[in-house]
Image (cartoon, rainbow, N blue to C red):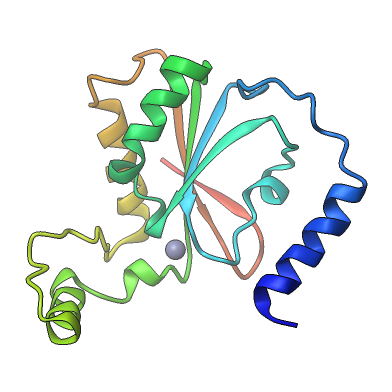
Length: 163
Ligand SMILES: [Zn+2]
């Protein structure tokens, strides 16, 4: 069975007992989460969320600069008021620098990627603080929104607050 066939078979099983077809569009907990795309993170299970509870915006590193577009839509059109930023231990973003990936792309595709900031970081806690500061300073986000940051420890499953 190919990977795609495997996925479709899993979906058949899922849809067979699916009962969440009537949920409203706006997230019930008025919550938006920004986190890394890391395959070991399951935001819903980590935080005890159900379908319909929250927006989960994911990208490499859980960087808020890249999530801003979605967060504005989340607040303005779908009523979310709390933003939770979650970065995590053992993140791939700690393992490279812009120049590394830019060079790799130039060698592989013969293109100049020097204008792309891949938003890697060296300090995990600082990356959370920087991303929260970016949200707090955005003129496009609600000043009254609660914004909190955490580091998720991939080896213990625990969330550690970042102040
Ligand atoms: Zn990561």
